[in-house]
Length: 141
Length: 141
DNA sequence: CTCCATGCAAAATATTTGCAATTCA
DNA sequence: TGAATTGCAAATATTTTGCATGGAG
Image 1 (cartoon, chains in turn cyan, blue, yellow, purple):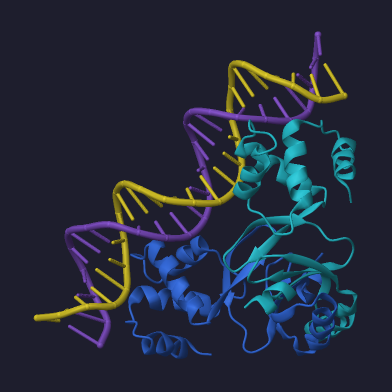
Image 2 (cartoon, rainbow over the protein chains, first blue to last red):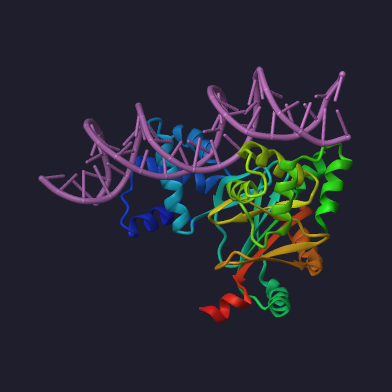
């Protein structure tokens, strides 16, 4: 997914393309790690120095509602955002460097069926995140 | 796990058993839903009207560090707490009434092995929550 | 009697809202 | 041009900290 694709999607929902949105979008598009609003703010100000933190919040909200970015949940906090996966993808996060990787998790259906049966619940959605050490950090210790 | 068991565990780490801790513990022990600090505060004040919100925060922190309660993550927020599962248990939450159920998730090992192999990560831990409708809410719609 | 624990008030964070000025289309 | 967007300041919400008092052991 390219920058233009994200901007086009923003535009197609009636948004105008501004310097602020372009800066935030570029940052979120290119990061390997989940970023907090303030981190996005700091990074995006290098592209658009007039950018305000409030606009970062508003733009992140917009990108999230379009499904282009997702919130990443962590022990230490749940304010960080990352580009979203496509389809049934889940997050794998490096505990040391923060790098995030998406992986497919199609083979969870059997588990859901079993749990649904055992509990009487109708399973609607799920949420899975894995934590570990990425290849670089493993060899780097 | 009984109330006394939780209090004993608190005591064994050097904590004194006070009215405040007893009230918060009783609330967390008996709830079917994840509760925010303020919800705990409101419920626990019925048992100990002099209780302050700050003490609720401090007691929840203590219970969490003992592994007796866990934080529950939600789209709407991640401040709610619930009793913790034992062993490899995960959360199943009803989207309508909030009821929480724990289920075993031992059969995720194969998935982790596959993902580890594909990504080069050494998987250390994971985090899974399911969402759906509980039996009551299904028939109740 | 001795500390640990408490509640209050205030500080520190994090996020949202109101609004006049700006700017994209 | 005109409505959407912005940044600022201020309001809210959430969580943490300092400190004098109170209470468990």
